[in-house]
Image (cartoon, rainbow, N blue to C red):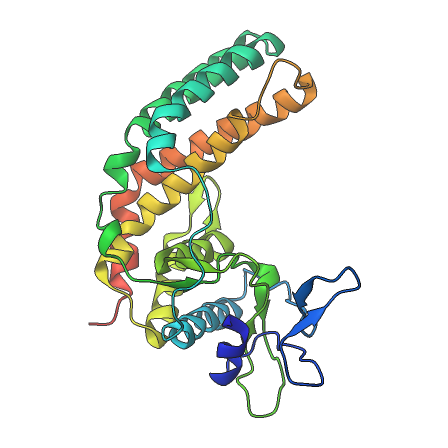
Length: 282
């Protein structure tokens, strides 16, 4: 089990609460079995404080180093495939644009059409984005939910490192770079895009603990773009004619914002890769 493995590696994570016979599984009143862990509260780390940013990302790197020897038992969770995004993304977007257009004024419809046209082109390019070495990038059991609430600083356990992680519900065997992308979104977001200086700082802090490959760094912009397209698809594919107009209007705002962020990532891809690569050792 992942948590038992982390305990053996002396990594700060929620410990399993075992039965009197030292078994990790508890039987519920309904007759089922469940794993029980101690309560570990993640803290809200101030993104504005550079030392805390670095410690948080180093904790992620230490987790990856600890879990590298863990067998890949946790398979990737189901989500839209590349084929689904390419084939169904534009259709869902077109349907969403048609339904929501009834509730927008002329300027709102114009902005949505512009965003939808751009997003449509991005969906068509999904296979191209994911051919940037994705099959050869390092894989391990990633945390899958890295963010402010998952970070535990100053754990204070005798004999264990002071920093660690909690919240492993979404842990799965997948690309290590997905966790690093989550770290960038947690600590390096800026208006419309990312703070390149912070991105470099985070990669440098991670690389000090667990070396990153140039291929992973180069793939990060594509990963960030595909994640936004997945979010757009998740929204647009759930819309139907009975969706309340207030919900549709809010979704339109989200779709327009996602298009803005995607444009930033596309326009600054070279600068982002350069900033990230400059932080690598060697």
